[in-house]
Structures are given as structure tokens and as C-alpha cells.
Length: 332
Image (tube, rainbow, N blue to C red; front, top):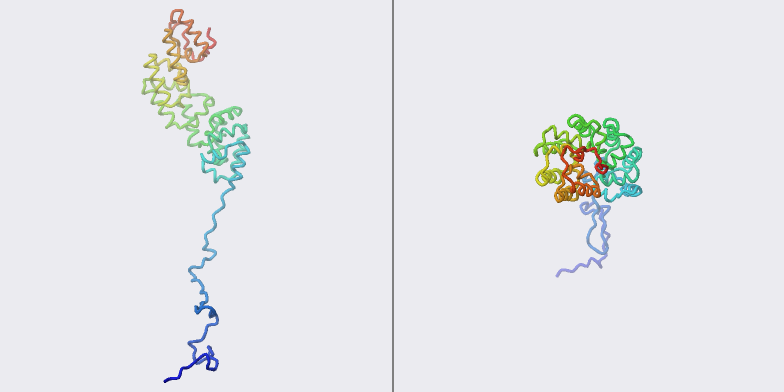
């Protein structure tokens, strides 16, 4: 029987791991054996060179957005509804405060007040994000120098139609000016400067074509638009067509009356045209369009009482008011 060897009790000479006779079993310098576990913690290996990010390969951090809070506080200090402008025009979120301040300062230099700014920014928040030097200033300069809008009236024009300051001079404002002056024959475009923000192709041409389609000659159409340029702004479907159909079918009147008084389309269909025409029919009175529509309510009823108790005036009578410049409230 072989004798059992006990390595723990039998004294032996110390075993040197770095014995030159056993080079394969030499311990590495950083080898560490945990006293509580037999697992060996290997030294950490360096990362491959391809995985190491060099400073030149790092992606540069994105530029920080402008301080939106300062911008909103600035607009609020002017009484402008900043949250409404932000919701209706999201590009405002990336607009520098300095650009908005530049636009506000320029509008103040044109004579606009804080109350004006509250209105125009609510109507046209695009103004807050457009570059002042390349869009807004050239548009204002065009209105003063080419459209001949008086400096005193410029504030009123911008107050009514702030979108004028967002239009390109070369692509829209100047072509529209030439169309109103050359084709329509409007000498003083400053009186209808708000039309300059409209597009000739999509706004003016369709209304000219509609008026010719319903029976007006091209000459009469131009005369109507020259006399009442605001006709360009009315909707064909919601304004021109229903009022024209009523004029022809229910009222049974002649087209030349509309040529002489195109302001007919500016009166309320439900609250002025229809009720007054029905009252004229009941009283068997035929009034000219200006007298029927421009008179105040009291004056209109007085006219009905006078004419209903007398013979109907013929068109040659002085009572047949066809001059659009006559104030029917002063007719006696």
C-alpha cells in the first residue's frame, strides 16, 4: 500500500514561482488572487486604437438655442401675446432676441405705437422672424418712395395691413403697383395701398374674369375696379356671386347701375340690401342704389314715406340719385 502524502503537514522547501527551471509557470507581475475566491482578476487590457475617440474625430456640440425665455419676457413687456405668437408661428422659437428688438425699434421709428405692435404682431407674427434689413426696411421704403404713401399715413396703412412689410419688393409689391397703375388706371395707389400685399394672379385676375363672365364688358369691369378698388378683396363665392344674383333676379335691375355704383358689394347682404329692397317693394318705391343703401336708417324710412305718398320719380328726376359722390343723408 502506498503511503499517503500530506502536503500540508510535511515540511518542504519553499517553492519559488520564478524558478528558472519552470519559466512557463512564472507569475505575472500584476496577477492578483482574491483570498475569498479562486477567481483570478486579469489585468485590464487597453482598448483597440480604432475604438478610441480622438479629439479631432469628436462631433462638435450643437450650438445652444437662443434664450427663449428672454424673448418671451420681452414681448410680454410690450403687451404682445407671446405664447399666441409662438404657437401660431413656431419659427419664433429660434429667433434671436436682438433681431426682434431691431424690428421693434424700426417700427417705432415709423410712428407706430405699442398698441399698434400688439395688433400687427397678433395679425402677422411673421414680422418677428423676418430680417429687418433685407425684408422689412426695403418694404417700408418702397411704400414711401414708390407707392407715395405719406409718412403720416404709413402708420395707418401698416396698422391695417401689416403683411405689407413681409412682401418682397421685386417679386410682389412692385408688380402689383404696376398692375394697379397701368392695367386698372388707378392714379393714386396710396389711397388703396393695402392692395399691394395681394397677388395679381391669384387675387386680381379671378375677379376680373368673374365680372366679365356675368355680363360686364372688359371696359366696364375696369371702370368698376377703378372706382372701387376694394372690390378686389371681396370673395367671389361668399360676396360677389350671391349679391350679384340677388341684384339681377330679385331686384331686376340693370348692370349699368353696378358700373356706376360698385360700392353696392360693400354693404351687408342680410342686414342692408335684402331688408331695404323688401321695404321698397312693399312701399312700391324705386330708389337708386346709393340712396337706398347709403342713407341712414332714419333717413331711409323718411324717403320711403315721402315717395310712397307721391308718384314714383322717373330716372330724369333730381330725386333719382345716381351720383356716387352724393351723400344721401343730405338730400332734401
